[in-house]
Image (cartoon, rainbow, N blue to C red):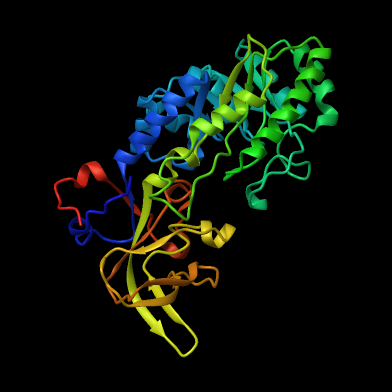
Length: 392
């Protein structure tokens, strides 16, 4: 389905802002829910992708759990109605107050990344006379076909327990009085679209499970984290990711025991396509070498292009039928040379005041916005609230 932009409403709104297509979000959640049920997979939405309360409420109403990487995310999830027994807490650097918050709410599971972290959780749980449910995040040393900044499963990354330490940490966890060792957790990165990456991870997990079996331990659950990507080049044609193929690949390749449950933590694939950053053209700057379209949105509103050299499709939405095109470097107003959304982007001729949509910004867009240059955070608007306006 193609996102329709209510331009008459947009003309009266101060830019830049985020616009969320809630119809698309609901359809994506329905597909994800149906496929997860069919393949018997437990889904925990990765809150770091987008923590807007309206978005979180829709995910919670669909019946999913939450994957959190901070105490703030745990609070946000609980405030939006997520059941604590569906919350997993990941992250390589959990502070004591965050661990205590999770213990107080009796969350489903901590994904633990090191022996020192395990010891602190055991100590803090003892102070509360509780047992903390724990899964060990294991670094599988598997390379993923994605940007090196968002690759998390190889041995040079900071995440997870090295395979060489696995047996000793399992034994340590099993000996701790206030630790209930219930699972294993893996995460090889984000924005992965090739199923062979997940097949490779599954093969490594199968090997690790054999090692654990020799220790006479069968984890209750296996958590394969997030990773499933979206199509940034074709946001309308590929609005909903292929959850069916993703789950089928995991189920086909993983050798789970009958008593084990499979958990995943998608974030980007759930919300990425439903959000767009709407900006206005401030100036068109022409020279003999370049044409610059200078927007009122910048890396403070959407940092992915500056941070990851990420591609986002850029659309001129004010003039749908302009036959004349020009190539622009589409840039923002921030005093950084990296504040650029795209180079040599072919668009219908732009003029001051035209509206531009930067697509596929529902994940890691609004949540990563900043106040650099003392800029205010962008507002967020939702399709349900603008239905009274004619669609263009």
